[in-house]
Length: 243
Image 1: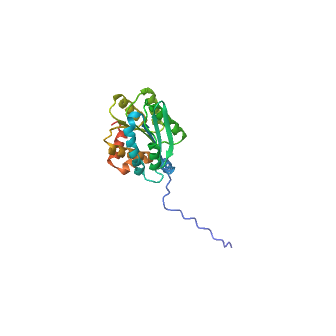
Image 2: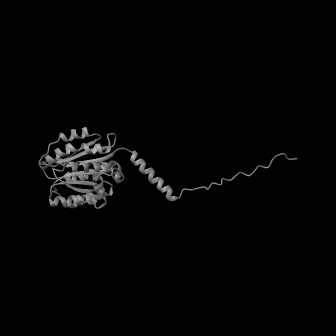
Image 3: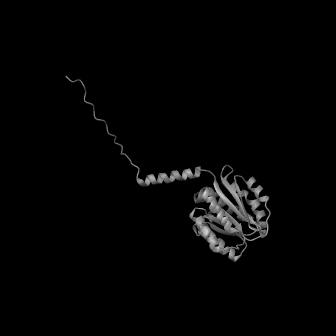
């Protein structure tokens, strides 16, 4: 007599088995990449200024306002800023990236404006080289004139746009030639153009802060903060970059 008992069949789970669709997997991968990008470090922003002689009052204003950019994104590893400036007879220099407002202000206050022609092409070319070396989230340019070939500037601005580096141009004054070029740089790079004057320091400070928020978190961060200057920046970015 065989005493071995016939094993009972294993119970099957009545819960429906779910399988991830290709769309779910793609969405997960995109989310994981976005989280990794946010965790990879601070936003990196290039602040470029025309330091020719006519710019001294605005340079002094920028020295006073640059803290707004850091304050907008927090004090801890929120933003790395590189200062680029041109002046004199072909001088165009770039600092290292700095993480705090004191270091940036120290760099800026050590520079005096000198007469000379604009060198915007060198600024855009430098930004392209920095992008080849690593990430650059945005370029801010502050100036009042343009004395170069617009086709060369447009080519470099377009290449920045293709590499994900929008140019935010802040124009002082109403020089028509400069305005045409600045708007085209903003459009081709997928950035934005704004006009300001020496009496609108508060407005400029808020817009610089909005660019810093964009550099650290993109449109999502601007939408989340939701201040008037953020909404204006979003409107300009989505509307072709000119206002």
